[in-house]
Image 1: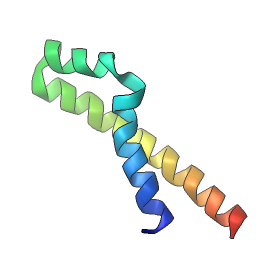
Image 2: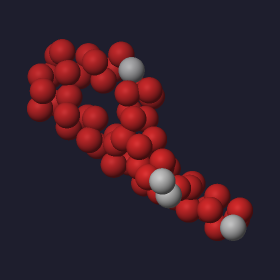
Image 3: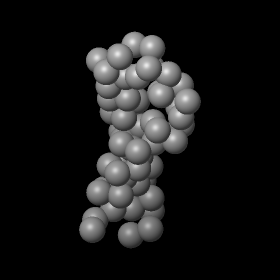
Image 4: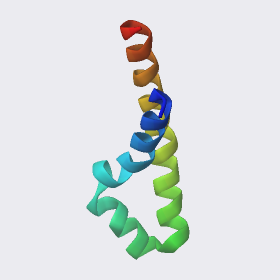
Length: 62
């Protein structure tokens, strides 16, 4: 698997690790639409960050 797949997986999983209880509360209090909105917004942001970090590391290492 190429480096960018690891970055995409990390970016999609990161909101659950970062937000934890806050994301669970968004699903409980706001419902599915609010929970998915919060998760997808964070997933897009963290995936872009993970791809940028992965790209920089890939360029530096080789």
